[in-house]
Length: 178
Image 1 (tube, one colour):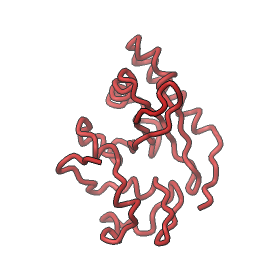
Image 2: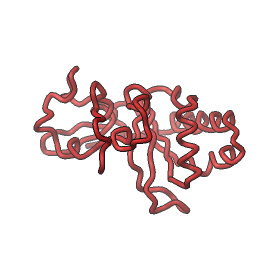
Image 3: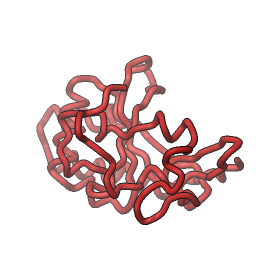
C-alpha cells in the first residue's frame, strides 16, 4: 500500500481500539483498547505485531483526504473493503467505520465524499462498532443511496445515512470469541 508522504498517525490511536488482533504476542477483541496503547501511542511500537505494522487507515493512504479526515478528528476510520455484494463484487471498495456517534454522517464532507465514490461505482460500506469485545456490523450504501445521489438531494442522502446507521446500531452484535 502506498502511503501519503509526510502523513503520520500523530496522536491518533483509533485503530488501536477498533481492530481485533490475534497473534501469539497479543490477543485483543474488537472495539477494545490495546493494552499497549499509551498516551503517546503504541508502547511496543518497535516490536508491535505484523498486523499492526502492515495495517493503515484510508486517511494515511488516500491523498484526496485532508487532515480533517484523520480518524480521531473525523470520527470515521476508513478501511479497505473487499467483499462487496453483486453487482459490485470483486471491486475494491472502502468501509467507513463510525468510531463514535453518527455526527460525521451529517457533514457535507462525508456526504460529498461518499456520494462521489458511489457515483464512480466504488463499493461503499458503513460500519458501526459493537460493544467492547463484539464484532462490528456493516451494510453497503451503494444501492440505498444511489437514487438520492442521482437527484443530488443532500437531505435525502443524510436521512438515508442516518437510517442505515440506526438500523446497524439496533441490530445484534455477535460476541467475538478470540
